[in-house]
Length: 371
Ligand code: SF4
Image 1 (cartoon, helix red, strand yellow):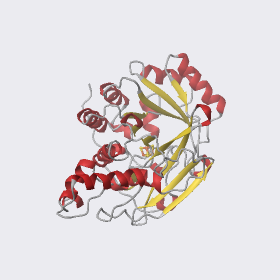
Image 2 (cartoon, protein in one colour):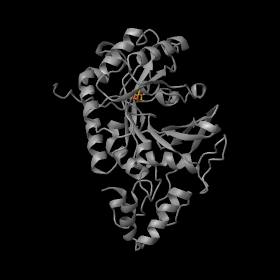
Image 3 (cartoon, protein in one colour):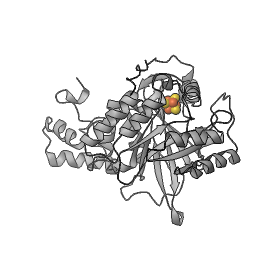
Image 4 (cartoon, helix red, strand yellow):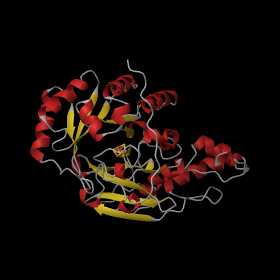
């Protein structure tokens, strides 16, 4: 029995959609009007009403590199979530904020280029621990940079949410899907669903479940990002263990089947690692793999993790790779590195102290039948 299914438990705005919250509050004798007002005040103003569930105890630490902020929230047992707030510049000197959130503490996927992958999986986060990261980003952290985007409500505006922090979202999918429903709840955080993106290493069963979920719940614009990182199975299996059980042909089929969005394409991420996947013929092979898939290729210069066997790539190599992909007709962008010195850049989340501890193993599913 979940906490909020128990009779007369205080309803939890971090774990429930507004409709679920109203139903739970009704058991305490609260009217729909009162409970809806309380739910809105919590998510829009950061104001907690006395009869709702307590916020989880959270010790907050934050670090800032240029304008990128990483913050940690303790979740008990000496474990922490890690989240990053990234400013995205726009014309006219304005910017919006993207929040990169974690779905697990650590990760079982073991990608060789990723700091989190070296930790192993400690545990999956609950819905409230995922949603709390947004709440803290809006109302709990002191933002050190321009505050003209501080909303009239007193919170900071977060325009986009990406599940690209610690963890593989498909390995905690039930919690991730409920968190998406709360993020997009128009009585709650009211993040447009086209501004939420789930990034996966390529768990094909999860991709299918996500595709069905967003169609069933009217959230068709939720984005999917695929962490590809290799031109062929040999290289991909050497840096991403998932590829041994779910090779690229299976991944490609899942990508093709994912519901198409009218205005934006699938995002394919490619971490460019010197001496591993950075040759021009690799760019050609990646473009061939993606040829029939409407997608944007996002080339990410490798951010060295602790004790990394590889350095960061030089600019000329990254530019040459991007130019070659564009010459192949593939829509391609280079992601600018942010937050490297605070260990807040892509692939750098993960606490060294926690890494010393025991981790939980998670079996990788056997491959689905090949076509
Ligand atoms: S890249 Fe993502 S899936 Fe791979 S180990 Fe890191 S957090 Fe896990």
